[in-house]
Image 1 (cartoon, rainbow over the protein chains, first blue to last red):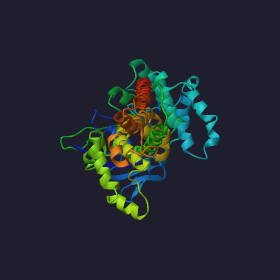
Image 2: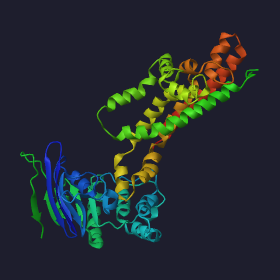
Image 3: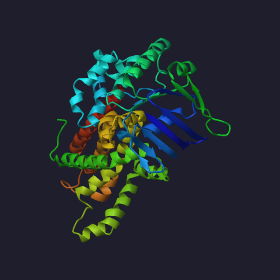
Image 4: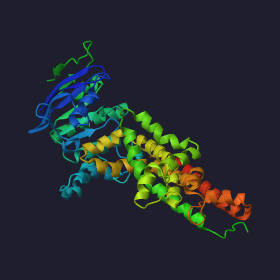
Length: 223
Length: 223
């Protein structure tokens, strides 16, 4: 469960957002420059909001009032970057194991679970390859496995399909829905593609720079 | 015979001063260049210009500056001589002169190398639970390594070739402060062509190999 409400002063305008999700897919939709990625960065702790609060399950990870600001590495949030940000000097296996090594005590998992996850994503045969030897779709699957192997309580996805051709995009959309059903954690997904937003979103939040230099909050809930 | 050298001490002395210079330049240069590659702060341009200055200053100006600093009545020299330590006209002064001229080369190579590392890789590592130290040693440093190595090699070559400032602060004491470039100058001056030719040959071949190797490396670094 994610409950977030915060403001962030940006160069041209002030971003204001409220997100609540009990394990749904929330889509942040809007044109480029509307602050979508900034929202994800604030949730992950890569940027600090100007004020507000963020709560995941029973844990407050950010609160300007209570002076709480949990560092990124302790937030337990998975983040799929737009260009996937796979470590180019590490094999697929090393990429996926990277997060497990950060968390001591989790080593018992490190033998089986990553392999299972890679097989689940259909990239189990690629473990010894380097990212440059992968296709766009394969990169995305590896990046997803890497983000999920640490069992995050929330998954953030920044334009997950923008680097892919149309066919791959459509099949991966379905995969993502299945993944979400299986994983049972909130997904926050950023996109500028309307069709994608409607297909994936249990809830869509549209972000736009208003002339008032504020963000209009528009909510449509799909049946 | 082409290689005719009765006294090899300039070669060993040069290697020793250059090695010391490279070690100092690395220890100081890496953290500083890392900081400057990622942070913005007031006065950064001024600081950066000061760091790079020895690259364009005449060696005699650097020598003069060092005399002011470590000369018998110099700012630092006075304090040190009260403690019974003399730097001026020892091989330590040669090492210091080499360090000052080699530093900008290391700094610039390392800074460019750190800058070339995609910042989203560091962010990704953070979301995977890695602390800053681990990120530096597992992501930033390995990816910046080719550029840093080039900086190491170039600064070593530059330290080895330092002449003007070295002559001013370390002098020409055979076996003690007479490095290769200084030895060449005085060999020519004294009409000792065998020694001059041998040392010139050694330095030229070595420098050529260094540059050749750095260029090869620069070509190969693509992930």
